[in-house]
Length: 103
Image 1 (tube, helix red, strand yellow):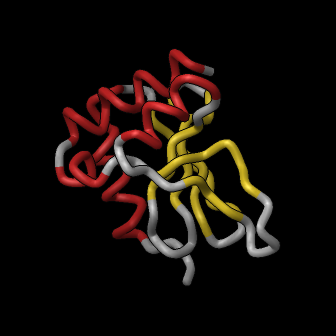
Image 2: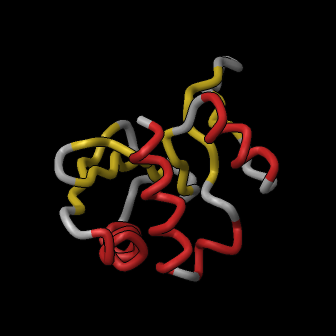
């Protein structure tokens, strides 16, 4: 499934309050940037992932987030945005700020 215009609009609505949001389509998904710094991706299946390592990744895991896995089982340093934040731009932006601070 390729990213649609509606998916792009959703991402900009969700993270727009951060300011400086841009995106690039890639490999069926979307890379999401703030002021040129990648902090999240939208996978081709419509899941939002935040860039995370170390303590921040542990916080996301404690919230029930799942690690992004490649088709061959390799993991990447991206974790799903907590479910409650998907409908709440304020909460999504709080998580995004934390992701940006941890980069």
